Length: 283
Image 1 (cartoon, rainbow, N blue to C red):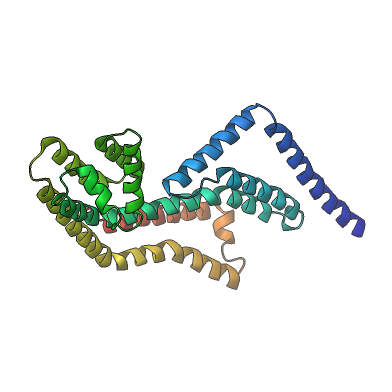
Image 2: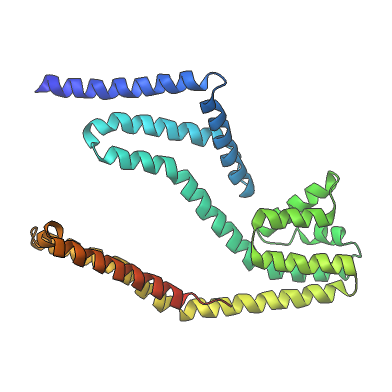
């Protein structure tokens, strides 16, 4: 028995070693795998750059490969859990970056009114919009000051203010920020009392944020009920399965049981979709 266990461990180690050597050989030259690897690390670098984080796409990719090899060895005794751990190690960076990106955009949207009001006040003393931006960037909160500082750096290397604002809009991809920057662009091109336009835009954005907060407060109970509706059936099924392991056998082994189960799942999905549509209020 001990020899079989030793052979099992040795087999897992050889698999991991073979995978490592294969990856090293595949990544050592100009192959489709190396080109895909470079594209993948470049994508990670772009995501990190948008979040003003140090570009370590290569480090993240190498860490993922090491984790996959580690779980290949650990899979000798983890068995089926190896696949779950491998998938988690592959998708975890993307999930984390996407979550950080959403939080970054939400913080920017909450600071739009500060940008508009600060720029309007700066324009009352500084006639140039670019100089006003440079003056207000030092008092803006993060991450808005980082985005405006990036616009100013683009202008220092030959870009225009309009192009910098367009690049900012393309990077963030926020409808609220697009509306505010559109008002600024129109004011720059048409002229007129730009500080008043920005003050009005800032007040409108502030009121929209207040209304969104009221809507989130009023629909919080509905969102909690939606979570209960989504999780509760699984909890009930797990409890019944624990009490009586054969409780769901008729549903799994008979035609009528299969039809009933399918109908129940469809009704559950329809209830989730209907509830989500009800609590999703657009302002």
